[in-house]
Length: 282
Image (cartoon, rainbow, N blue to C red; front, side):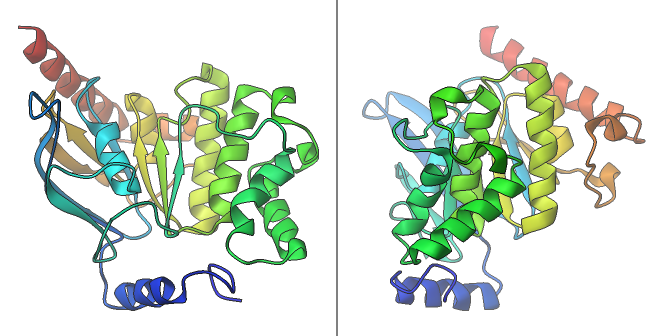
């Protein structure tokens, strides 16, 4: 059984494997601009950066700075006005099996149980019924939801619904997981529980993750690297490695708070955010 199932696009899979062996970046944004309304609104302007394999990258910035637009370009849901976005050296022309996407809005099918929702995406990859169930159960255990496998989405809390969405994306075995403010609608307690779950997923699966968030504390906790966007039009204000973490990921959020360099990094990001917000309204 190949990574994407017997019936999946073997040529695409082979090309991905070859690109990985050549050291191609999972994602490359190459001089990308995105305009709307026939050029009247510029969301992103001449942006370039690469996403490294197995790294967690957070894209943050003031509201309307284009971070979700860039994520949608990476997902293949939109296309650049100029420039191009590549996945392992191949131009992105639409959604692809190497990229899984989790939205902020709940996306489960209400007529399917939790396990059926997770199995849904796996089915198109050619796995047998037994294999589909095995994969679904594995990832439901990873997101701590196996006890609710036979429940329906309307019986779940908001945090549980997002766990289903993450399990469904992971079950399709993408190399890259794209997260678009996935915890933005959750309360504070559930949010930090979900953030700690993402750290566990990072350590367990070693996926490449790109996260869009408006939450500075969330970005600092989860990310190995933060790309800060300017106000519209979105450009890169600063591209920062979280060097103070010294390569560590923290399973408990409170353990990071006393880490030398944490307070300084958080203060730096809040200062940058204030600069962009004030610059926009002045």
